[in-house]
Length: 441
Image (cartoon, rainbow, N blue to C red; front, side, top):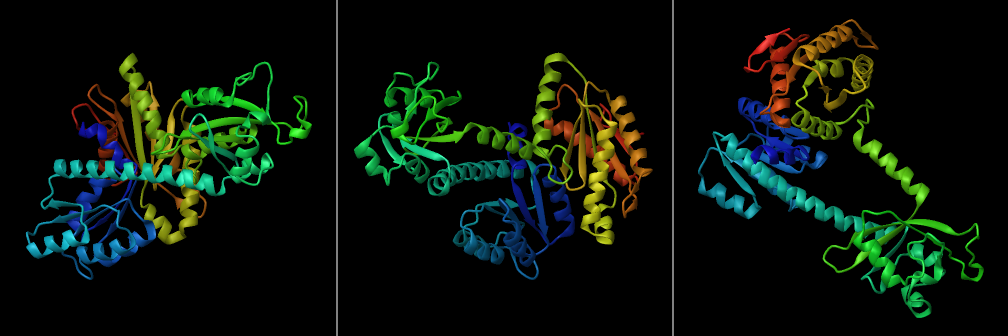
């Protein structure tokens, strides 16, 4: 259950503040494999600055630190956000600190030395709370934004009567306000253009709107006119709309949005591309990679197929950025992406996993086959003269899925192999075998 729920943490960003290097490095490695974004600070002052800049979802902090202690930092953070979860890690049992923590509103305590099983359970519980709050905030903000500024035509109904029309809708039907609409019409049926295949044909609003509400997964299109004086089924000024329905949270009402079909489909397509694509390289992003990974794991379970993954990152990438600038660093990532795209199959899933780290998911490929591809990529990258950066190398980790693996354990094997490659001097391929031994390749 813990493994299944640990994916919740991946959706969130975490700020970790700890002054002891060894503790920070160890826990950071643990967190980096599980979270989308990890920010690190070595004292409370740095932590506060990172919070103000990045607005993370969860804060994990030590108490006793130089420059500014963890509780002082938390106290100042609470002035900006009363909701962000703050988890304290401490090896002390100082009653004064605990009383002060209660006053500040600290959410959780983790005793040092950290028990990682207990720690991940605390993170999962905290992540659930954060995600639930995000979903609630998103829904509330979505509705508020729509009602306030959305140019689409919107109405709210309880399934019988219309209680709200937004300004775009009122403008379309030439009414000043909802009261005027209710006095003159009370229903939008007057403005509908009926055709033979119209789902609302010969049906009053109270009937056809229930069809929309009860079947939100179905596309419902209607044709309307905003000019009753020239109402004509053949009028070229008639407008076609696709109706979308959303339940209003906490109310027995529904929000119906009327969208131009062409515009809606264009926006939908653009959204799908943007939500799955890494903005810099144009390849898949981490979210899309996990979507495809889960599909491939299901296929492995169903058809007993092979599945391997290559995980690699750019050696000394920080030095590239520090020496040549971030723009050159971005170009390096783009050029590496192009090299890999040319070398792999269309069925392979290539994604930017985060920062300078990439993954290649290879359906139907054994450990040996993936290793050969990884070595080919390593040589190709090393032999490429990168724009303004010269010679660039990468370290690779390879793993093949086993029966007991889930997405986390599968990727962790490749991650372990990758770190072994870096420990052995970088610019090499290491493979995780079924016995847990790293094999040099």
